[in-house]
Length: 137
Image (cartoon, helix red, strand yellow):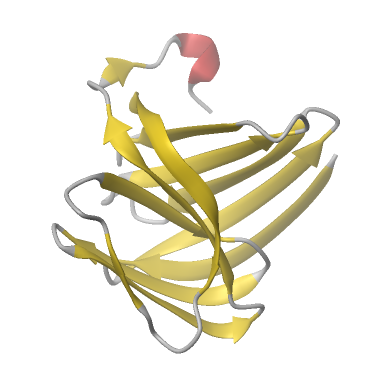
């Protein structure tokens, strides 16, 4: 397993991106440093299929996304990404210093240092579900 970590911000709150690669695929997990923001997790399976969910700030709840679109985009210089009324999950594809601000209209992404590519998933989150004991880590 290969693991890479880097720091960034989502909605001006400090987070850590953890990227883990195994034989099953690569998972991009954003984790809150102060447990004050819900955070996205994107897994790109080895067969190319995506799984996306969001963890609650306290890590005890999650909700999965019904995907309607996924892919990678070049963040360029502080682009604005419209969500067209859908939920959106964004995580840096590579180790980078990043700043993502999101609201109901969309998201603004800044990659401050490093490779500017970002994974983007668009869809609709389902209801919050409690994590079972083995899922909480």
